[in-house]
Amino acid sequence: MASWNSAHLEVLYNVLGWLAFVSWSISFYPQVILNFRRKSVVGLNFDFVLLNLTKHSSYLIYNASLFFSSTVQRQYREKFGLDEMIPVAANDVAFSVHAVLLTVFTLAQIVIYDRGNQRVSKTAAAIVSVAWLSAAVCVFVAIPKHSWFWLVSCFNTIQVVMTVIKYIPQAVLNFRRKSTVGFSIGNILLDFFGGITNYFQMVVQSIDQNSWINFYGNIGKTMISLVSVLFDILFMVQHYILYPASKRTPDNPISLGEEASELTEERKSPRADV
Image (cartoon, rainbow, N blue to C red; front, side, top):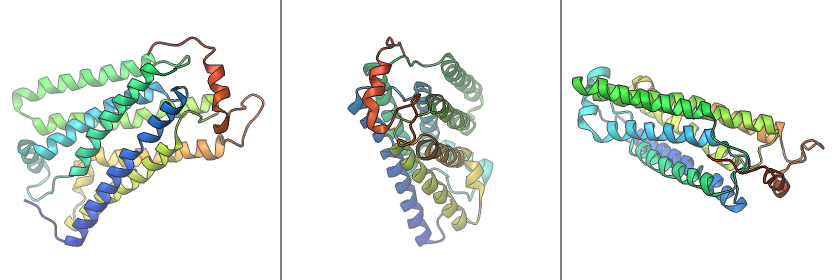
């Protein structure tokens, strides 16, 4: 079984991992708090939240299985090398559990708070349905052959796809509204920091083991970092450069200090079912 060559790098690995956990976990709260204070979820894209739940649920299945199951770990090493370290850390499992719980809580806010005329799109519902149907097919294929690592890798693939897709609806909504009101930038800043620290945690492991297998052995962790960072940069550009509070026109008089005005207009529309 593989072990750390450098005690200092092992410490750095754990520090980076838990920094990523703290940053990513806290990143859920600005949106939850914003929803609570406004008693509204107008401006938060519901497709983003639904896709996020599918993504984090899939990632939890992968992380927990590879971290706790000796059978899955054995099959991982049979594929990538008997001397390879498992690419999932305790902080990865902790993050996934927390992410699922907070995403479910956000969905509950969508149900109880003012939604304006927003609703989950048929496209998002179809994507989620296809994702879980695909997962079910993978389960039936894996059971006869006991291909458990292959099975959890299917869930990891699903979370990669959801990671790529989930940010798009929010970016499009911001573009159409020419505003980021209702979408917490605090969430994005913390998500960005989490993505950076998560990526460098993998780099530290690779340097210590003199192997870069963990990057493609756990492609999900690699992609969650890179894709998150790229979209976070896009959201920061939208919030601070394209649609800042100081950049208002008669057609778009919305600013972060004028949320009440926007909510008044949104509430004129009938409430939509999720």
